[in-house]
Image (cartoon, rainbow, N blue to C red; front, side, top):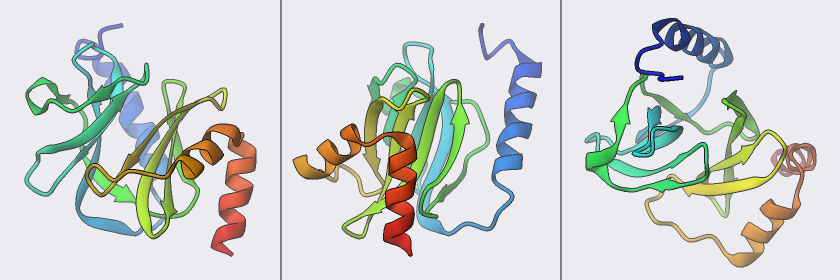
Length: 152
């Protein structure tokens, strides 16, 4: 399905997103989170700085997107949510905003629980192998429980 031609699909997606974003959430100044289209034509998630330049993105196949000229942002940008274990689903993907070592990050998983990517709100932040291994080996349910325990 070509999402650029599917206006009803776009409206449904926007309404669903608005319903999930009704709770108050902290925002990171200068960082915007947007649903977009990757160069390969797949839906993805993009992080932009305050000037609208792409920091980093990932599409639904797990491909990273770093070329500003290739990105087509097609939906309304929303503030990056910083609440622990908050999430929303899109096209079989789950996105969580988390904190590791005081760094805000976006964890992307498919709905089966497989790890896809970790995107930091700090451009090019590198997470330690231990952090990445923990995320890869943790199911979505365990992840929510453990992050909830850390937040308590």
